[in-house]
Length: 126
View 1: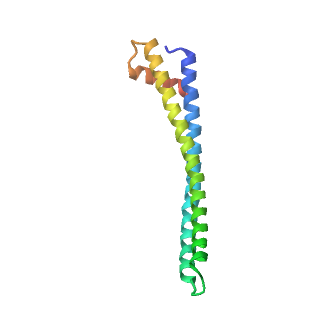
View 2 (view 1 turned 60 degrees about the horizontal axis):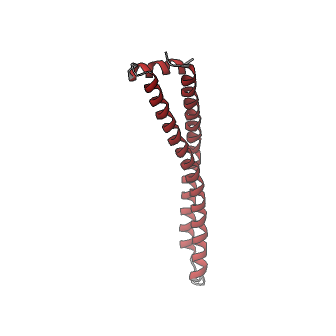
View 3 (view 1 turned 120 degrees about the horizontal axis):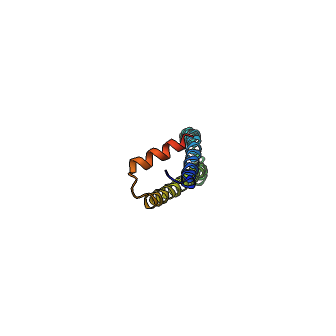
């Protein structure tokens, strides 16, 4: 039987992982909105192209396009930062999980991987 503190540690890792996973899922809506925003900006850029008048100078057209592109980059970076932060936290949890597994293997060298997995899983459900 694996010691209670080790089981509790496994539970905490699992809870944090599920929480991060839910947070990552919530960003799907943000990514969807960003894709819609990209489409909107694309349409606006096409409108700029079709609205170009002979009186417009290159600088004013360039300014309009650059403002749109800056906005796209800003929105894209916001989403990327959120997702990258979650990925970093998930990587840390993977390391914690591996460290916990190695500790359990050292303390219980006679237990097979399947036995360890079954005991931890049965305790996670409690």
